[in-house]
Image (cartoon, rainbow, N blue to C red; front, side, top):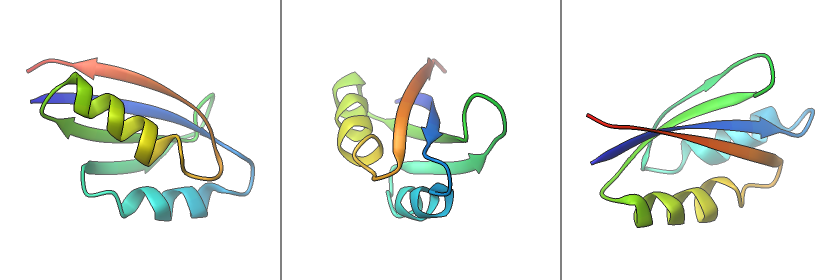
Length: 76
């Protein structure tokens, strides 16, 4: 299993819409709103890097209101 944290920048006033959309993604283990350079952080677990890449592109970056993401990969 690969665990990663996705730092997410969101358009102003789109935080609720983005949060609600991401909360529906079953692979996302948790989402927190943060303050500073990023607006949210999400934790996901995937089987491999290919699955992680697909999830980030198709389920996170595709959400209307997401400006940019940065992914931090951890190891167990």
